[in-house]
Length: 100
Image (tube, rainbow, N blue to C red):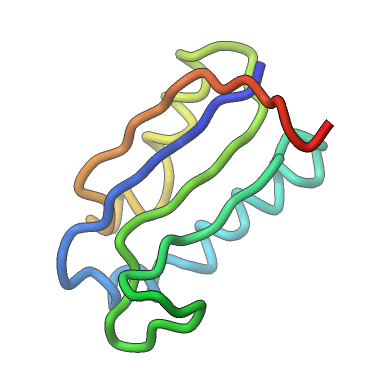
């Protein structure tokens, strides 16, 4: 089943985010290589794909996991969690309707 991982950044966490980014991306690359990643990306804090020092307000990942518990365990082990980038992470089951 698909699960949405919705994470909110802590204010002022851009430096921590950038430092942990290579490890974070490596985990996403692994999901993609397994054919389990539907989409992933950050949410800019401002209306721009390149927010500069304004940074990001969070992230969204939609991927396939065996269970909600497996998705939550995967999300809890994210390098952004360990680095203190995320203030909160929510994992929810997700039903893809579009695109078909």
